[in-house]
Every structure is written in C-alpha cells, then in structure tokens.
Length: 266
Image (tube, rainbow, N blue to C red):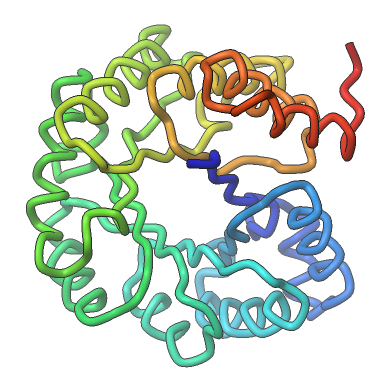
C-alpha cells in the first residue's frame, strides 16, 4: 500500500494561515492546496482550532474554499464533535476525521457522530490519564480503540495514532513510538498507523533532518501514513527511498517516478 501523506499546512496555528482564514484570502489557501496535492498529499488536513470563538465558521469557509480546487479528500482536524458535525453536510468526499480518543468526555460523543458515516478516522492513543508512558500503554489503548469502534467502522477505516511526543522533553519518546507501531502492527493485523510527524522534533534545532530520519525508522516499523509537510522534498524523497530499500517498491518504479518528477539532490 502506498504511504499516505496527509498535508499539514492548512492549520491556523500557523500565523500566515490564521491571517489568510481571518481575511478570507481564498487565493493563498488554494495555492497551498494545489502545492500539497502536486507533491503527493492524499488528504488535505484542515484545522481552524486557533480561532476558538470562530472555529465552526472558519472550518466551513475553509472546507468550501479547499474543495473548490482539491481533487483529494479532506482530513477534518478538531477535537470538538460540534465542529466535526458542522462539516458533514458540506463535504463532497468521504473525509478522514482527526480524531477520536478514549477520553470519557469525547469517546461516546464521537461514536455517535461516526455511526453510519462513510469516513476514515484517526484514533489517538489518549485516555483520561494523559499521554502514554510506555509502548505497552500505547498498544493497550490501541486495542481499546479498535474494540470500541467495532460495529461503527470497518477496521480498514481506522488509523491508530500512537501519540508521538517530542524527544526534547524525553529522549525515550522516539523509541517508544517505534516500539508501539511495531507492536500494534503485530498484535492487530491489518490495522493502519499514522502519526503527527513533526511532534518528534518540537523544541529542537534542525527539525527537518530529525523528522526525516524519524520517518524512515517509523516506516521500517510499519507506519502507514503521516501528517506532514509534503513540500519538504527531502522528506518525500525519504519515503520513496525507504520503501524501495524495504522491498516495498516493485522494480524501484515508485522511486524512479519520484526522481523524474522531483529531482533528488544527492
């Protein structure tokens, strides 16, 4: 299965995007949509959480603006079920929902929202005790999420997010995520895994090289997709190179096609 790139750039936590959304600057938004698609994004993530009082209105405007030029589906990124509910009637393709977690004030509401819906969902390994401390905790929560979603969504619609923490706050966070992905892929056959890639490098210099090397390690453990910057050509090149070296690219065709379209600096 091709590695799934979820383009992360339309997030109002980024000052330029917050300004563009506030000013209803469709041109800036749509140029970023086109650029991310051209570089391989299979989903366009949209997040308007920075505008707490206007999140729903901003989300609806952003969906319409993105869909006017996008040929790929959207990843609707909000922890608020009300924001997600407001998006359904204006979506023109089955979306990815980011996200559901095991937190008691969110899980039942999200199950109700997802019933009967045609969508993919990012399932965060988070519960009321907070971020996981060990890979075993991540795996236990992954099992609970899959069990809780049984009968609501097909297993192939579930993407488990192990919740990557920055190595700047704990140097074991990278290793924990790697171990968790490997365990999830072994213990829950067929389930997909995804992560917010740039979390690993938060607070550190030279973040791009950290993200790139971490991504190659995660793909080796079975990671299926990432919320990431598709415009980082070194990062997308790392995906194609890693898949080729792992024997996941028949006759190296994916790598060669990528090189033809995006010359790699060697």
